[in-house]
Image 1 (spheres, rainbow, N blue to C red):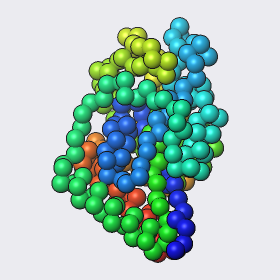
Image 2 (image 1 turned 180 degrees about the vertical axis):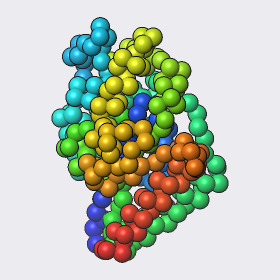
Image 3 (image 1 turned 30 degrees about the vertical axis):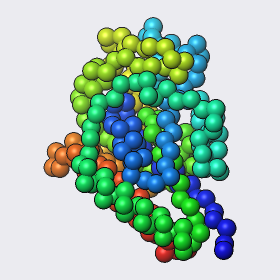
Image 4 (image 1 turned 90 degrees about the vertical axis):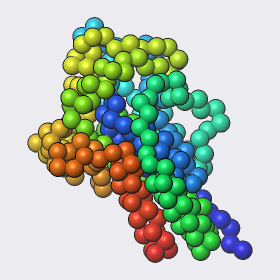
Length: 256
């Protein structure tokens, strides 16, 4: 019998703060067999190294909010081994997230679909698929990080929605386990300018809220849950992502 080879597929789930990317990652983890989550937030530099802007620590600046060499090295480890390092400790579970459930029947059906096709790939091609679900608010800034992702999604919501969610969830737990509370004007002073700066080149005319995609991020799939002509529930978002991921597995199965 041929030896089973492990194939790791890294899936980027990008979006602004409070866009729903972590919730999406957790739903996909329940559906995709052999899946792990990597939270980009875990790779913020020590607080004392963060730049000070307008009198505040800047946790959002695209060029300073993430330790990209450490993050990229971590992704390479996951890609090579299919495992999260034993000594890694995420702090994501300490943060409060809004519960946005999906339909139980949808989760059951999708999980079964992926179980079946991954079993088929294992049986016919001797490949064990492992999913690395990478969520982050700065996934598409650093070229080395982008190149490691096999599929790239971006959640885009109206700025007013993002602002409302951020103001409603002001307390964050840092990588050191400390509480961070947004100052009253942190959204407009730090968070919003950094989000626009990080994503301006991704959208035509630099229009982060309404512009079409440029070619900056190859193969980027844009998901807009609150687009005027068709709003999407979390169930819809999960189904959309799963369609793309299923087609990726099918294409590799046919091409093998």
